[in-house]
Length: 420
Image 1 (cartoon, rainbow, N blue to C red):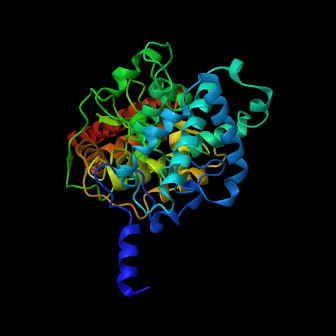
Image 2: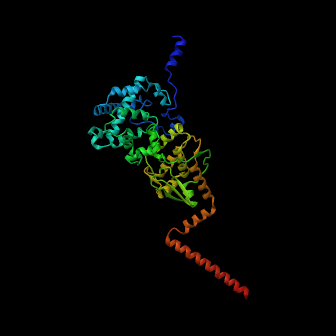
Image 3: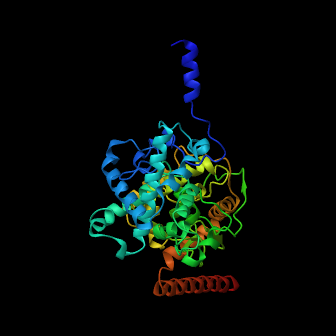
């Protein structure tokens, strides 16, 4: 083979470059190395990035079984599904950020099996009556089911959402009664949202979900019809911790306003209101994958990353965690406060910011100004040391009155002596 033949062969085998639709990314090494488990599926691979790993071969058997069950239950035409997948060839590889070392025939099989597995999994998850004893023994065993649902949220473990949606629609006549794939997906991931079944279309609005990780991010953002905060080049350089703010006179409260999202932090007067956050085993995985998505796909709209950065400022030590727990802002299911502090202190490492939420910037500036005011700290100290309860408050007031009367008596005595 001549050098000319080698070059031509290399060019022909080169994967087409990514295009504007690229939405599934490999997490870069400098981020992945901090917590590799948070980005790597544990039980089930979806899509091509992790397909060949040996630890997923046992699960492949279950995926094939679910794929077969879906085709038999729906009487779907496998030929139509494959034809649609084959039609994706010119652009499909461009949806992934890295080269896919599979032939097109292999990719067709991966998309076909993984899609049908997801359809059957989501359908069975809607009702206990749909699960066989074998399902309950493994796939829907509590710990296995949670692990699978988390695997499906990983950034590297995705198929494009529109591909799944089109394949699902091909399986049913337009006149048949069946939930849309969007509603089926919302049902499966109901742990992460509180959107009523009949409000899903309104919730999404004009937003197009690109994959399950992106859907998870949407759950944390404001309602699409609401205007999100503007963004600017100014960044927060410092914010006192929760304990320091408390000592400086800031009072923490849970933001309980109906319909508001996790990101809805407000500061007015002396009250910093923060929506309640449940911190559990899956919390770090969820935040890390959304933040990794924002690093690639939403670098100028990193709203989740902004929230995590503000929480990182507020939480420096376990004492700050305890402060927020006492105020009801954090629900700690990790066990000890140090674990929560370490979680938030590690999330923003190696993360890039190009702009920042103007709402959060103003909030942090106001908090800094409030904390620097010595009068606020003095009032807080007086309240903390002398007004802990009604009896102590009454005693403190009585002592102050007695002190004032003593001063007045002393002054009167001095004046009386001078007059003599």
